Image (cartoon, rainbow, N blue to C red; front, side):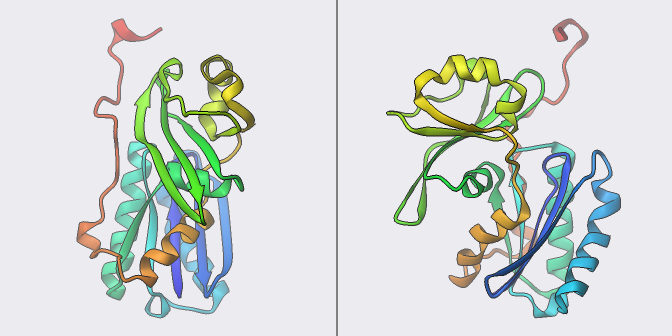
Length: 224
């Protein structure tokens, strides 16, 4: 199973090449330059791996939630590459990718959504498979979903940005926090591989971003 994975949902431009379970990856702090960098990074990664798009079984991308522009870039690039090589596509939740990268089995994933809010999801891994206990959502940190029990790990940039508010929200529910985790393409590749193995990738035209938030700007009177 060979696949290419990419994510531009955060300030990082992240790519990974999965070749029969061996992963080569690259992550660059891109700021607002994802569209300038991503295709060159794809070419570099494929050349380094000694493969072309025709040697791949699929293209995966971080489908969101995350930056609106970043999600459109990742989806558009994945679609374009897949169209040209007649490949299926898999969109992978950025929150689930954060959970996959945590190395633990009980995760509260929170990504900074700006505007005083976080994107959130709650995941538990059982027998090697992730169970979604709370679907991707958007709220103020004080209203983030509370999982049952203890021993949960808080992961993602939401905990870096709103650590105090989330600490008040979760209290003893959390046993650890990993605030620096972001949805790296290697985590996306790991989640996408079994999807392609089962033949569950979709045609490129059916791949869609997951935005969650409809409103992207504050009015002057709403800014604080």
